[in-house]
Amino acid sequence: MNQVLRILLVDDNPGDRALVIRQLQREFPSVEVQEILEAEGLKNAVEAGQFDFVITDYQLRWSTGLEVLRTIKQRSPSCPVIMFTNTGTEEIAVEALQSGLDDYIIKQANRYIRVPAAVRVALERAEARRQAALVEIRLQGLLNQLKVGIFRSYPNGKFIECNPAFLELLGVDSLAQAEARNLLNTREFYSTLEALEPPQQQERELQLHRTDGTSIWVALSITLNTLEGQKVLDGLIEDITARKQVEIEIQQLNQTLEKRVRERTAQLEVANQELAQTNQKLGIVNQDLEEFAYSVSHDLQQPLRAIQGFSSMLLENQGKQSNRPVERQQDYLRRIIASTQQANKLIQDLLAYSRLTRTEMPLQPINLSLLMAEILRQLEPEFKQRLLSVHLEEPLAEVIGNRTILVQVITNLLTNAIKFVTPGVQPEVRIWTEKRGETVRLWLQDNGIGIAPKYQKRIFNVFERLHSNEVYPGTGIGLAIVRKGVERMGGRVGVESQQGQGSRFWIELPVATE
Ligand code: ADP
Image (cartoon, rainbow, N blue to C red):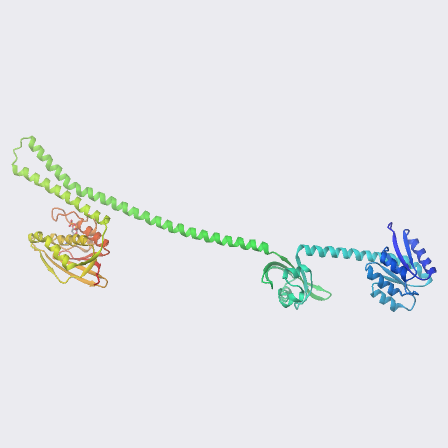
């Protein structure tokens, strides 16, 4: 040991002091001994604090070794002290040991030789204590800095000890408070761990609801240990609130994202469906248009071909200074006129049909009795010619509709009723209304040629005709106008018929309430 060892030697007996000093100097070359002979000297030395070790005699004229020990320990608790005692004063030695004495030596002549060894052992023990205290301080500092809460508890839930960080994390001032508020259910932890195979250890994450209303997330690590035969639970808690918060945010973000993806997918599906429907409709419209164009050109071709044919024949005849009779030429011209009329009628009907879809259609209550009387009056010349007999079952009901369209619809139905009769048969029409809740059905029954059931739907389509122009002239648009017109007024149309047994056409419109 190169460092100077500074020793206070408290002894009244100069001979004993000399013996001790000799022994010390033999063992420790750089020892400095300060001899204390009375109370004042001790007081000054203690205040100055310039010593590393104290050797005191028990029996002093002015004090006792025990008093000296207490004075030293009060001022420098870690300073090692050894004491000389007389034989028979072992009880005093024990008491002194309890007060922090490091060692004692029985004061006999041959025992002074033991002094250096006793000093050495006491110094080593003091150094070990100092080291341990340093480690303890460093460990404590580390644990506090880490903000890791450490606790130990009995299986019954009672806490034994903890570090300050533990209390801080729980938001309490003492372990008693933590127990009273049952912030950590250590009893439950114990029963869980007890059921496990060794190592009885577990880690979990839990939320602590603190008494000040705040809450934190902690990672808990618990182990079941045995300490001197007693089961104890050692635990470690760490604040993971920040990480948990991020986790929760990510989770929420994912959920929002999933929701948005689901919503967007649903929107796209709807959009796709709409697109598909539109495509389908466009397809149908296209198809309709194609059929329509085909039918128009087909039906127009017929009169145009006739006009062309008869005009060429007329031209031919003129060039040849024809000897054909004038009657024939007149016949050709009549046919040409008839064909132009037919083409004109076709165009007129088509225009009427297309107007139906484009013009506005204001609706109003219409008294069918009055309307029917007016229509019959207008058509009278034609009816007279065909000897039509009409039976009106008055009174007819009132409906909601458009006057102009309704006149056109009923006129078309009446014209057909007169037209489609077996030649030579006098046409007869019966007209009546039938109330059906919120609607009214207007019936027109004829004694005509009838319609086979399989054609009854088709005849309401544009250009659908069941007979040739020669037998029953027409354009095939009349019933299409009937259907479209009624539908635009919010109603429906239909027919009941059997071939050869007359037909009963009906149109259904909303009833006009008084
Ligand atoms: P058009 O009268 O110009 O032929 P419509 O659309 O009015 O065209 O009628 C379509 C077809 O329905 C007619 O060609 C005819 O075959 C059939 N039809 C219409 N009304 C009657 C009726 N009252 N009795 C028998 N057949 C009818």
